[in-house]
Amino acid sequence: MFIQPEWQYKQENGSAMHQWVKQKENPLPNDVDIILYGALLSYASKRSEKALYPTAFRKAWPSFQSYNLDEQVDLRTLAVVDVGDVAIHETDRMLSESAIEAAAESLSTAYSKSFTCLIGGDHAITACSLRGIKNAFPKDRIGIIQIDTHLDARNQEEIGLAMDSPIQQLIAAGVVEGKHVYNVGLHGFFNSPEMIHYAKEQGIHMITLKQMRRDGIQLTIREMLRQLMYEVDRIYVSVDLDVLDITFAPDVPAATPGGLTAYELFDILKLIGENEGVRHIDFVYADPKEGDLRPETVKMGVTAFLQWLTGIRLDYRNRIQKYNVHGVSK
Image (cartoon, rainbow, N blue to C red; front, side, top):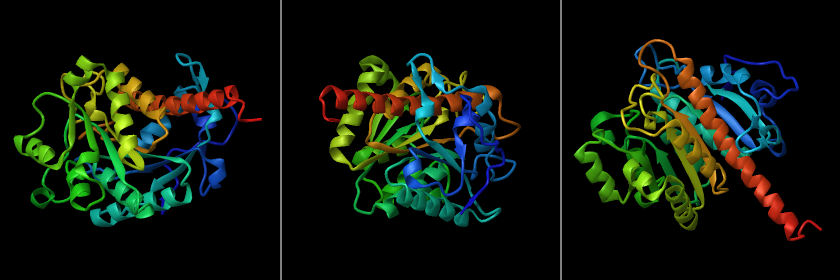
């Protein structure tokens, strides 16, 4: 089901990211807080269907330390385990998507108390991952927070399997309900009237970047999480890096002017990490259509991942402090 990642490190002690993120097959469930895995499927690239970003993501680890100076937390207290990449088929997209779905189901079942993080690949993998999670927890209501410039809800019957139809696929299959989908970061001239009509028809919550900045990004995200926690059993977050302004993500093919700043995305992900209802996350669509990934884009993605971990670490710390203040531990 999984293959060893192209970029691996010797296991050793230290504070650099490649030293405290463990690369291990079949870790024991009690030894894992966050399960990390990659999916190399990419419809966006003209070169092939193999995504570059999961390998570049791991290759950048030595540049990052475990300590978040802004928040005064050390991420080494989290057990993060990288189990490798999903083994995808070289030419058959349907088999590749089925493999990602099976991997998501397997990990969600085996590590039901852990967070899962999928590194892609483009947005097609989001639908695969969510189908697998639904298979693992068929009775659970799932909410989606999609951080994206685009609605990604094109009609699948018209375009077939593709990276810009995951939300439409999931609603059509009954995996999620439209009213439990929140799309944040929408802006500009990048969604068709047909997609907007579909989103309204399905009850998808469309939160524009202009609205978020007017009302306050932190307040908007907190209210969205509060509402979802009331309505669903688990929350899945999909981070499409094209939500960033094109100056912050020069490689991302669908990045546009007027998107989120790096600082805004980092703050959003920290808040999301602090919410225990968010059990699953993916980071997608970093691959350029041609050429190699630039270090700026890769480091942006790694920092976004670490900000999410920071939120989880802060949530753990706050819960422990509350636990001790009330004297429950005794």
